[in-house]
Length: 427
Image (cartoon, rainbow, N blue to C red):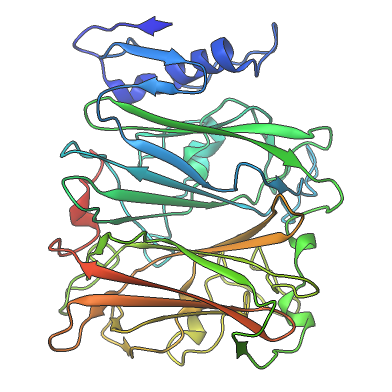
């Protein structure tokens, strides 16, 4: 199948039609009579695209798109929401996307963490309409099943779910390209008769070239929701961490990926939400044996009134003192550099930054173990010591038995002054 366009068309507005056609033509996801047109106006596409099974839409040096989580061989919980009877106990997994550019052609993106006044990149009004995300207009995400919002609203399959994403950040890949990351805590539920679904993600760069990835996921109905996969943190004592013990959680610091480099963010009193470091951290951990990782996937805890929207785990009052994030008390993340926060306060190097994390979720891996994932886009600036030219990030996760797993990354410093300087803001 190929599509050819006039030179006056706008490529990013056309991708939903292109992808929707490819889903129908080569994936076998929609049956006759069931197809629903996406809620965008189809227009002709600027480039010639060839869409083939398994390989997606091809173009020279197109962005590489990877669905980093859930893993392709994972299962997820269905969530407890039903049409007309929603629930905040949703599927509770994270969708994390990695978009890698390979030349100087940019992707338009407004990087954002969960911090006032921006509060991320989620746009509920555009989500309900299946419209483009104004902070990432080249992003397209499709499910081949309906999703049920916490208020019971049904979000129809094959609509663009890009506006559901919570946060986005960028790091500086070697060479001309960059790597952008996107995180979404799926507060929504899947219908109770769905046993598997396909997730498709794509990004269109400023030359109209498309990167695409697609995975199929199973739904494990033995757990009602993401929260049912992990013990609630308020129900458990905080164990004393013991690093290096047998059976400690397997911890990965997936983002940023070395040998990328990080923007430090503004170093003076102009520091704010839009000129911070704005790189993306993605920590993943799997508990072993009888150990578990305590987590409130939706940020709701007994006896605690979270001032943030449901689905966020930011525990900001605990950050300055380096206290645990009460939504995921087993997580500890440190930098070997000071963190300068908007407003001028400084969190010293080595202090726990887990309270700043934005979102978290859980899934079931191929071995039946629960994999927990947590994301943070850094909304402050890193202040290096004299003669320091790199940053070490350490992530530790302690399970309910007190066993601690550790992962570290050593990263260079980018010449870009801020994360936002790595991508043009959307027009």
